[in-house]
Every structure is written in C-alpha cells, then in structure tokens.
Image (cartoon, rainbow, N blue to C red):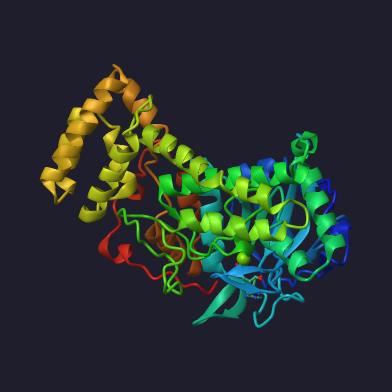
Length: 487
Ligand code: AMP
Ligand code: MG
C-alpha cells in the first residue's frame, strides 16, 4: 500500500508534445471536500483506502495541489457529434494529470474532470457540477462491477464554488482512471487537420502502448483496428444485454480501448424499451437504446476513415464487417446465460426476441425479470412472472417454448440454476431515480446515500442484507426523470 505522495509517474502522452496537448494548471475548487471514493479504484494505484479521508486527498483532487511529477495537460481531439463533424473539441474541462504505474506494472491515466478552463473550453466554463460528477462516479464503478468495460472513477470532490447551469449549482471534480484517454476523435483530429506526421506518431503511440500484441501481426495497424472493432462489438453487446443506454455516442466519447467512456445523460433501462432515448436533446433518437448497435458501427466507420492513410480501404471494410457478427455472437451468448442456458440452439435468438417484445408491450422491469427468472425452477419462475405481462396468451406461449428449451438444455438442480443465473443477472443496477436520491442528499451536504449506493453497486449480483430498497421497481416519479444534459 502506498501513501499519496508515493505514486510513480511516467507521463508518456505528455511527452508526445504540444501538437497533442497543452500544459494547463487545474483551477482549484473552493473548500474542497471528499464526497465519495472508490476503494477498488484506489487499489489500482496501490493506494491505502484510508488516505481518501485525509485533507490532502481533497486538496489534490480538488485542484489545490499537484505531485511534482504530474504534468497536467489538456488533450486536443475532434469528433463527429450527432453525425456532424466538429473540427475542434479537446479537453474543455478535464486535464490529464499524468500517468501513474502500479506495482503490477499497469499504467493508469489520472484525469481530473471539472478542473477549469483550457484552450479547448470554447463557450464552456471548464467546470463540472456535483450532480454530473456523482453520476459519472457511480456509473463507472457500477459498470465495472457488472463486467462491462469502463473507465473507472477514483473519487468525487465537492466544493462551495458556484457553477451556473439551468440554475446555480456547486462545482465538483471527478478523478477518472483509464489505461488511456485516447478517443476515436484523436485520430480524426490529425486526419482532418492534415497532420500526417503527428497522426503517425499517435498511431505508433497507441500501437506500442495499448496494442503491443498487434506488432507481431503482418499488418500491425490493421490488426489494431480489428481489435478496436472486436472490443467495441463486445462492449456494446454488454450494454444491450444489461440495458445500458450511453446517450451521447459521439466519436469524441468513444475510447480507442473499447471501454465505456464519458458519462452524460446515460441511463439503465427500468422497463424494457427498445426505443428508449435517455438524452433529452437527442430529438431524433440517434442514440436510442436499440440504435446503439448500428451507431457502434457508424462510429467505427468514422474511425476507419481517419485510418485510411495507414490501412487500405478494402482491409478496413473487411474489418468493419466483423462488427455485426461479433456483436451478435457476444450478445446472444450473454442473453443465453441470462436465461440460464448453457448450450446453444439455432432458435435462441428468436426466443430472446420474442421475450423482449413481450416485455416491451407490458412494460416489464428488465433487470428484475431476469433476476426473478433465476430464483426458482423455470416452471415455477414463469408461473410467478406471468402476472407482470398483459398479453397472457403471448407470455404462456413463450413460457412453453422456454420450459422446453430449458429441459433440452439439461438437468440441473434448482440451486445450480439459481447460482448460475444470479451470477449474471444483477439484483442492483444504477437506476436513474436511485442516483437522483443520492444526488439530492449530496446537494444538501449529506454524502451518506451516495456512499451507500456506491457500496451496493460494487456487488450487483450479491443479495445484500438490508438493501431491499435498492432492488425495487422505481416509483412512478422515478420512471420518467428528465436528466439534464448540461453537466
Ligand atoms: P461532452 O458532451 O461532455 O462529451 O463534451 C463535449 C465537448 O465539450 C468536450 O470537448 C468537452 O470538453 C466540452 N465541454 C463540455 N462541458 C464543458 C464545460 N462546462 N466547459 C468547457 N468545455 C466543456
Ligand atoms: Mg466528451
């Protein structure tokens, strides 16, 4: 275990120089205080969780202090936002403080979000509010616990600094961890600004640091792009299987590592709804729940365009062609497991689709349905779950298919079935209304609810004593929350 001043830095991205990022110092928050910290994320830096409670922790991650070896930089990138190209974005309110490596030899970017203005702030104030910082923190750690690749969050620091959004709020910072903060938009920036040397340098950097195994391939850049395609297919399959809606899948929010990145108006589905749009400024539903799958491919195509100086168009197209079949394979594999199946049959896709259609028509809670399906034998479970459906004949027909399918899958005891299913079907997810309750308490200075919710979500598959209130369907007010997109 390390003390805070014992972190070891190796700032590889900063060393790429001024074409890639600009030196900017964090602008401190007034009266910084710890809102919540993740012991699991601290462990990634070998930090003793007790240091989170020390005043210097809030000072460091509230922008008052820096390690001597930190080199805070704002990165430049661009990207396609809602389908249109924005030529210059960049870190408008976040800073890469440096790269820390741990005892296991892993490098972690320390990125301080809400750290003040940078050359890329455009019309923004460089700040993040408490509400959105808490949401990013909870989502990062909750997704990770569900097994969905994601950036991580070390802590949220609150403050008394006023920040104006629709109303006056308080500024906060979230310390984000990821092996890299390089986005699709980084490649797009150097491609569209016609800086081939810098683009080659960026590609070499990413290849060497993050895809070293691709070096061994005859065409390393192509191998790297294929790997990006594969990782995105897998990540989005997991989003769809667990009902996660990202909300702002612009290419500047897509990580080159295939991890969930840049949390905004995201939501987990409560009732299953394929057409759900969590981002209220997304009027056309470009980033609706079911559109995430084709948008994943669209984003990869945008990246492919930026990689045309390195890889032939034919090879890029071929690699892009891997996306959909890989997505489908991962998705179906997970959905089979969510249904308790251990074998594969040709009609499984249809079994899943029929179920989802029934859930859609009856407004069935997506998370609790699967959890309860695993509580007991297939026959007993479907009898109990039947009440949640309006189309009873439709559900009965599905239930018959399901019971027959389970019978063909093989004999196992109710206990085995429960264990297997509960290990993939969470009881607790980050419902918008739960986040909202925690935020309301935090905004009035009580951080206990954020901390409790975070704790519950770190073990989403394990039933936790006394935590029943986190495993309920949302109350009516909680189902139709409008989550502000300003953050
Ligand atoms: P986002 O929608 O959060 O992914 O942000 C899109 C772009 O706007 C990025 O370049 C951000 O850095 C920038 N941005 C968002 N909010 C602010 C803010 N309050 N101040 C400065 N830049 C911001
Ligand atoms: Mg962003």
